[in-house]
Length: 161
Image (cartoon, rainbow, N blue to C red; front, top):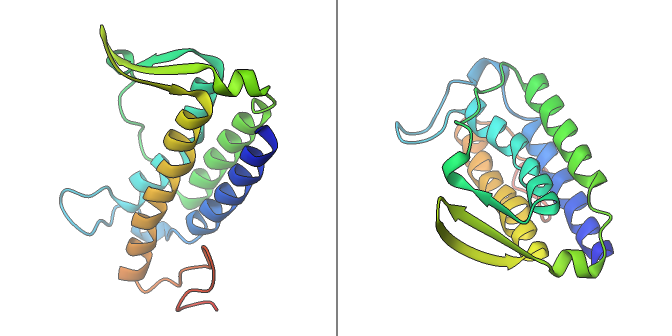
């Protein structure tokens, strides 16, 4: 179980990093719509997602009622990448778990209300891996709208085959 998750994590985080490398420093405040995150906000959010892995692997639950406010966006692509690299590395170091630890329940709560409970491995895949894939999709659209070449994700792109 652990070995398969490590391969998946490394692959998806590597792909995520390649997209983060394309964020233009001169467009960190750009966003495609008023309701959208800006480039810098989206990049910072993606860079922060691995920290959910630390919570899932180290705690039995998380209470959204005590969640900190949204992060202040990093001020440059280099800062976003450094933040991502540190978070990815820290989370990966915690992934040496037994099958029993990966199948142990993890819950997401909002105060007294339990929103759901999943095995840790499912919560990790959902909140870290799948969540990153979702926001990578957004980031690839931001790049495309700004004429920035999109790197290969699951195969060649129209820009880099």
